[in-house]
Length: 179
Image (cartoon, rainbow, N blue to C red; front, top):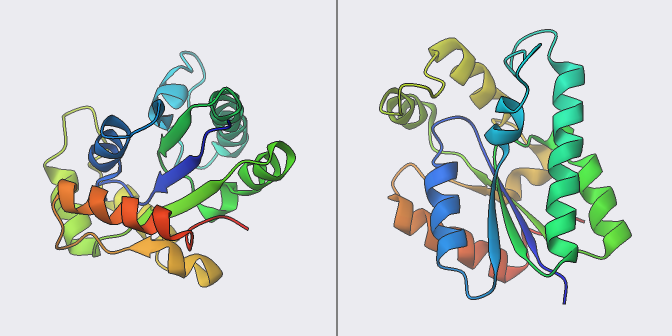
């Protein structure tokens, strides 16, 4: 039996890592919590912060690596919770893999208000992104999602356990699946 995939995304400070850890940790089936930051940080020489100009090719390669890891785990029977900034502009490789490998793949965007996002980002660990301009820019990229707007969960008033429960409900509903 193939695993299911949840792409849990949103701007920095949205709660992705905390929520993904709960969703993966409380799962009934074998589940992988794939933190995409690890694949970016694996680049030791020539790394460009993924939100800066000049990072486009690097980001495409990392997304391909993420998608390859996700599909390998899912084909092996593991559910996968992808934890990272996977904007709509990066979904084509995931859609192709889901179609090719007949995988169920859900896309969930955690999007608290900008004020809440910035507040949470200020409280993050020292090595995490805290630059207000960068966070605001990334937030704006998730502000208007057109047909994917129905994949948004506003986590402004939710703690991480409540947000994880909402993600589970959203995925179980089937409405968050990628077509």
